[in-house]
Length: 74
Image (tube, rainbow, N blue to C red; front, top):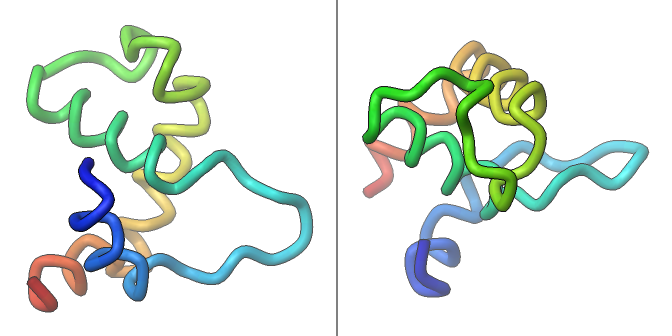
């Protein structure tokens, strides 16, 4: 994702609490890559972070409505 795209999406991410988490930009880019290419989570390129993190964030953000709010907000 470009800097401009990330700036537009920042308000839709939940706030971080406690321990620092893997970078939202990196994770979102990985989620997009996985979905766009029809891959399994375990096949995600390493530069996007651990596959378990990608899956957990995809599941959590989906359950919280983050992706739906992003689509509505854009």
